[in-house]
Image 1: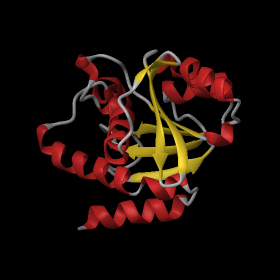
Image 2: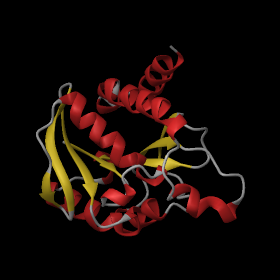
Image 3: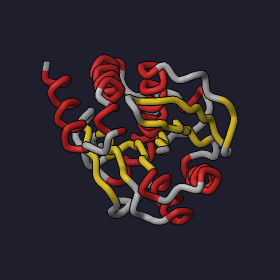
Length: 189
């Protein structure tokens, strides 16, 4: 069993925020893999299913970004899983828009959702970093991440989310390099 968490903020007013790209990735995986509709669990929305042969819990914490660790910790404890079973999908300022990179462990780079998860469960979890680009100056970061994707970004966003969902089986199998390569190849076309 693995737990895949998408980070975001609950509520319609946040739905298209750059900060909610983690929620969007979980929604895309859920749709493509045919998971049942999520239900309220673990202070969030969760659904169980399979990607390939791997059993997954897809989770979107409803605790708001800054308290994501409460929801994630509850799910890990419920299933008696260690941090190696956890994958977190999140927005990444330090990656070009719609680039996808996977890494295990590392710092939080000021990301409050990652900081909260580290505080609750530790830092050795796998991260799927979904590039949103940087606004250029740190004073503009908060309005940028809490701003909606631009109309011109909708097609590349949909393409990236579709590629992540289509290639999720490699991630489920633990082949991070093949997942990143397959996603990049899909986005070249």
